[in-house]
Length: 288
Length: 338
Image (cartoon, rainbow over all chains, first blue to last red; front, side, top):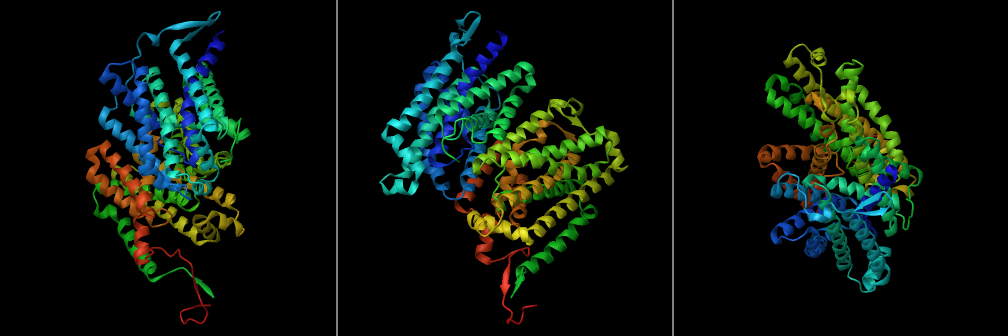
């Protein structure tokens, strides 16, 4: 039963990793951009939520109503103002520009909020649990977080395949030049994709900040978790990122159970093993 | 027809470099301790940036995980010196081949990731190395370890001699690495590399085995980076997983240096290092604001002057400091040799 609990905890945190991964996967799918600042943007969302909760005195989960649109606007502006300029045949400029952005966000947050670690307080809900089955207790908050992750990915999937915007995303992803010929403003399409990515990041960032302590330096590790989930799940597949996130979460949970020092290492090793055995990931859709 | 590498500016460049090298070699006789330390640190960054430039600028392998090999080299120095009683200088020399050996399976694995995903893959590898290093309790685990006094004294009896020794070691190692890169670029493989830099698809269609060349470059870069890593931690005399595998120190700064100086040009990292250290001396008091500005400058250069400062100089003035260009000289021309 102890192992069942460990795996269940891993699955639940896997939902969070899937949200890290979904935003990354989305923009890679649409514009072949890998955002090195992704993890730092997650942390930025956590700090935005911190400001909102302190300023308005609301619950972190309520703050999402404000944090999500704010992050989406930041994403749109970032893409229009900066990242669109870096896109082209050469992959070096976007990589280095987002790398520079990562350094700017990290040190900007350090300057504004110091290196002290913070945590968002969600109140009583943080410690409430319910009984899932005989002897299996689940925290309400991790459970909500997992459900939100599944819903977010389902929503992205719907948006991608059922809406006009999704059609624009897919068209631009398939062939940018032809999409432009069909009258799509790809600069706008890219900016919408980044806005959406940052909206997902906002949700992930708030849940991360409620769950554990955060400080300006923890971004890169979140980028790596998201990235690993994307590759494990297979490029371009939204449900794949959920599977990837869960596999990563479970590996880390099992590693931590064996030896606390092995938590992160176990996740990395499973990632490298899958890369060695099945480099296209478990549920691939497009080739990178 | 014959191929000529040198131009007038490169002849002047080589002469200037030779004079500078002689002056620098005698630095222990004219500089104080502070100057020597600073110069030695500059050399290590010139070497790291030149190696990264070879990797990213020529072979198109944008790694953000070179700290894996810096840290590996550092830990090899400490492991060899403490556990096996190897002389530190010998340990630096051994760190190179071991670094290359480790790079082979790493490359085989992460070369499955393309482009930007490759970059993050290299980062994962560096993280794995860092986490593994913190599990090695004989080398201090997560909190790190100092180089034992006995090992340090074994290098040279007096502190001054020891400092001179590390200084010359840094100068020599950086000189050798730069020389090796120039030699590589002037070779047949170098021509292939330059072709890959300019257009990978065209290079492939001309019969270049792109994967193999990239693999070789990755392994050679690991060789050099591990040696420099060992040297850096011989200067520092103390190592910990967080300093050894630090992404800011060994990758962010190195990328900044290369991008500012001029990526894909051998002269770029040298110019970039000089600028980086001038900025650091002037702005270091600003702390995190300084890093923030550095990130902003890197973005501005990448977007509006992607070839960096040396790239601008080459475009405007056509200079080259090292004879790397290939020009065809027709037989009839009086200057042409057989």
